[in-house]
Length: 445
Image (cartoon, rainbow, N blue to C red; front, side):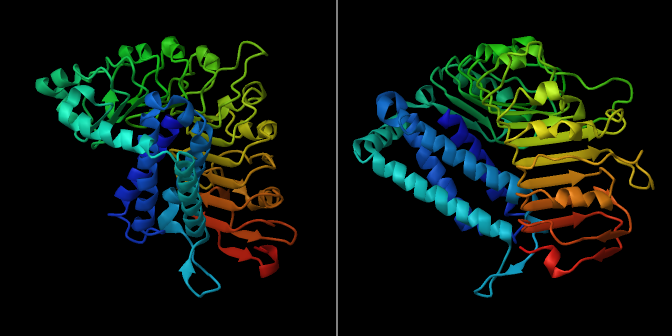
């Protein structure tokens, strides 16, 4: 759904703009990011006019959705998380600008041009005029006709008058809780039968809210919840984004991490699945597929089996998080079956809760095998010997490589010619490396 993609992109840009206060060196400058945000808002208005302009807008939904996904992918995976680590290189004009900042700027330019073309295709100005009329009328009519509710302070949910007002908003399509994280549970009204977007990551749920599975129109669901998802989550058959974060990451020495319900394999519309602390169950049938799933994040190596990976054939982004000592039985199991992901572009693999004082993290890991389609690779805490870097160097499409927190261990790394043919960005952080023997021919780009 294009609307869910646009809202997700809007929230990503909001977080990026908010970070500018703490990180003033953020490239590109906030004005450029703000321009993209303005274009996203214009797309959101167009999509909200869908009921009165059904055929005209639906014809452009795929174009809108793909443009939003493309920009969000660049902002999140290539830039936002590492803006303060970016290395600087000289452009032909002599200006200091990083490769990743340049990539973000180019993608924003592409996105704004795409939006302009979409608006040109909607050349009949009555569409936008009708939207303006709706905005004006909604302001005069009060909260009962609002289609989007944005709560900037979660404490408001505990005020009776606020809760009462929310009961009189039957047409709400989006509920966004954007305030600071609230460590204590607050009552939240969720009886919106038409709700499509629910972002409540800043609210802590001690129990899974049963009202959620009744919101059968949901396309986007993001909550903070430490428990197991119920089987009934599969009732949300239109859901495209499922994001579940934990309030705290607590080391569990006794129990294994829980699995998602088997019913998750029936949720055919899923595009983005980010469930921290849970694993994908092995499918019960060979006919089961999640053909639309593009992002899978928060799982451990236990989910990276042939049985699971073969059934998400179009996966482009994979995030693996292995906790010590919870998931240490087969910490490198995932590398055996990643070759089944022929479309994989981005891989993040990390071991967390490490004791960095240890000289040896565990047995010597096997030679890893990565999908040859990879463009961006982030490794953390794996403790590979530097000899294994020859495997990474041979990846034909790899452009961005980030090595964090003893991803590779040892005092010396000697590179050779014939590798890293497409590499444009390399980050090495928290390492015991003392000698790096290389010359310019080893990194042609």
